[in-house]
Length: 500
Image (cartoon, rainbow, N blue to C red):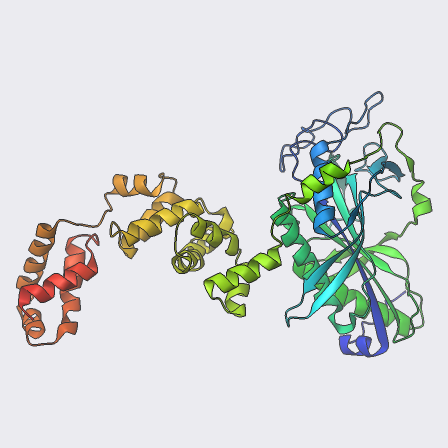
């Protein structure tokens, strides 16, 4: 059967109300897995980080990771949730090749955190409150690699490989309530929510939230109902969307697809769908199960989780300043416009600049280094700013050397290049490369006199009042000293020596 045509987005908004819900899975950055002592290092050789427990072998028994529980509580608190005084794990039964136990240990009707919210700021300054239904603990599955075929999916593949390293890694699933009233802004709201959640989790230090590596994944639930009808439509669930841009595109596409189905007189199928990055479309997966299909029952091998109220309050005291409040504070302290702040955030420079300022550098100079020269170096290397082999403290040291007159800007860039090349600290690079500014007054005077003698016509112009002509002499002195002279002091000496 031919799929119904997509409907123009503006027409969708005129005729339908979207109902949006988001489920975000977050891998915690614990050293070991949720129920065993296996390491969680990303990118290890396949099937080298497994044991009888995470493989579900007979006779093995799980033990809850305390740090994972602590992280779950801190996430719940940061999302303004109620922390359950008592809860337990359940077995979620379904077959899939990357589930070595053939069930997933999760929380079902007794999650660790419930009834929260996150206020999300849209680009035009509008605030949307996204209500959180629950945040619960579970374990991740393994990873399937489908070889052959055009899509990388199981359909059309020649064979599949399974890597169980990820099986058992601690996960937090954060589930929103339905977000009503978003209408034409539904795609924007979805992206803004996942962005704000990512920023919050990064600030908490509980996950690296690398969507490109799968440590943060979003499932988009969407349904349409006739405009202002109040009727809840049948939803689709687009699974494992792995970028902020893709979250927005997935919502937009599903709105136009479902509208086409409904206007063609056909029912929307309750199913999971896969997002296709190349075309920005979704593709049908499997029919969506209900809770009954999973046959939940309490996990008999794990004791209930009962965090003492005193511990919860102690963890509340460890919560950092919310990222959006921190951004407003820094914007005021650094006198940034909204556009400048947004550019720093988008470039991934805000944390680096703040750390450089904390290490003693003026905010303006720290900002200039990170968004100019260091951003160029990151771009040429194909890495994020934070991936450069230089620390904020080292950048602050370079700035201090310039401020003290030990380096000029040209030499400072060479020092940074040396640090990026692994040659040591800024001071090590200065010493090894001999990059300190020439501070010997006698040597500078000699270099100035030599340059003036070589260009007597320029010296005469300066003597006659054309001070701007001194630039040629400054350039000659800088060349003679291999850029290691203080250009300002050189200019002063030129004026003195010609008697202008």
